[in-house]
Structure formats: structure tokens, C-alpha cells
Image: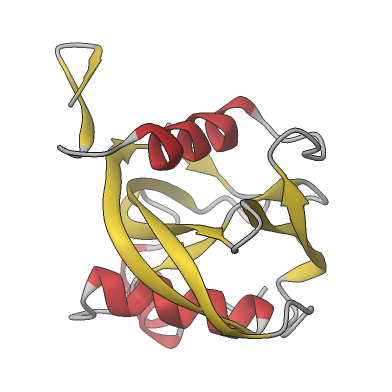
Length: 162
């Protein structure tokens, strides 16, 4: 996976120390209520599409960019479904990061699902009752996007709240 240039520059200054970054996740649904998933190149797991925001980038613009870059699908954000924080992540090279994760429910507006960069091994549309194995946090984000009709889901005092 390509590391964004701004992150390479930042890592040159801070080394492997923990960084706080913002990530966006797209829960993209098509007209048959299938969800767009990608099998990640870094660990082989199936996941929702997403990535790190560039400095100064609007989150909705970032989720559209990430979806197009990774899958060739044009997505339109409809709702900010959840705002959560990931656990701290330590990468194989020793870099430590934690993410503020903004999950958007999106609808497909064009393009064709395909592996569109080096971040994915496979890309495809999956029915909600036929998902490939994913880690629990992916299911939580999907649930937030599907169930959210009003206020954004967030965690306060250890409890999920709208």
C-alpha cells in the first residue's frame, strides 16, 4: 500500500511515535441493497472501503476519492452514520497510529467495481445476507450505516448513542 506523501514527511519528523489520523469509511449500497467490499492487500481481510484523509480534505470528498481510487466506483455520500475511534494500531514497520473513523452511508452513482489500485486483492458487491468473513468492527460500521436514520452514532461514556 502506498503511504501518502504527507505521512512520509511526518514520519520523517516523528519516527514511529503514535500519530492521530482521520480515516473515512464508505458503506456503499447499490440498487439491489448489496454492499461494496474489498479484500485488503496488506492483510487479506475483507473490509469496507476507506482510507486516510489528506490534510485539509473535506471528509465527504475523501470518502468519494477513496472509493473511486480503490474500487472504480463513484459513490455519493448520503449520511455520516458514525464517528468512532480505533484501537491503537502498530504496523509491521513499527509505526503506531490511532484513527478517528468517520463512516458514511453512500449510494452508488457510477463506475464498475474492480481492483483499481494496489490496496485491494479483490473487489465486489455482496448481499447483506451473504457477506464474506470480516472482523467485528466492519460489521459494526455496516450496522451503523444501515440502521442510522437520524443522528450520527457516537460513543459517549463507553456507550453507543445516537
